[in-house]
Length: 247
Image (cartoon, rainbow, N blue to C red; front, side):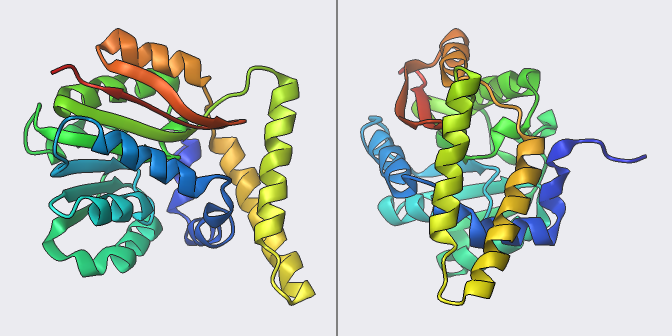
């Protein structure tokens, strides 16, 4: 049977490589997004020793986590084999502090990868959950809540919906400018090729997007039981939102 899920584009080596080489590094305020994530975790009131990275990609967020919190160990989950290979390459020096596993967290069975409910200090995710239909997003947020220990944090660095078509146009222009500025090597012919590859991946990714306003997703988290829920950084359609499990 043909797989009709739109997010299966990430199983493609070309798409994954083009994203990592031509788009991921161009994301506006990427360093600030990671800094906000680390500040929230440092202030959570709970030592960060065990975390899960959902839709880990090449492991860039986990790398920042393990560098900031040297006692931490991470379970990295993704269903894209090319992304998992990139994560193994990036994080090979962290030894047994990291487990990298292939799993599809759209399937509720993913929670069995964690040792037991109520024990995680943090769950993080970067530009991944927005590919899931809304009912699955909500279910995943519930599952994350159950896995977290008291004061444990969920932090989502995410692509969210704009408030209007006018704002969507601004957001798309913002990303296009960032991608064009990033893909500017000295060779003019290569610049054209890189820009074309980035636009192709951007177009493919857009087809897989199921975007939701950050305000709606924060409300979902509050309804589940998270506290201190907020959008802690936002520029157009790029947001860092989070919530903490009560003590």
